[in-house]
Image (cartoon, rainbow, N blue to C red; front, top):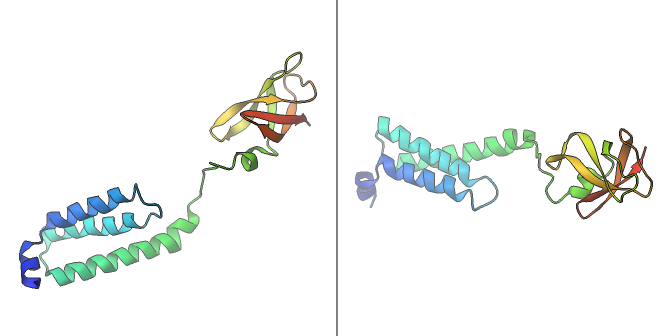
Length: 153
């Protein structure tokens, strides 16, 4: 069996396996298959330059895969900032301070602007129990649909 594998496994088999694993990462969460795919791609490129038996290929691929996953989990992932606030709109917006750019005087809603985008937007519609003039600073206290509920500072 090993003789057959040695004779029939070529560099492009590793490249195809690597591409399949990297592509499979799109459908599987965890970011682990990516590293196994990267190791397989490395094996395909290495086999272009150096011939080796299938057992050495498998051992090298397994070792490199485990090393890459370890490096990812130990050093890269802990320093990777999760910049998404998807599903956390209330937590991301409550307490934020913005400036009114369109007053709510005489109407039910106005617009405010934050100094930096929050949840992908820097301008939001707001409502308040009090009338707020342009330029005043307000604090977000709640969310009602896509409209912020604010109170003046």
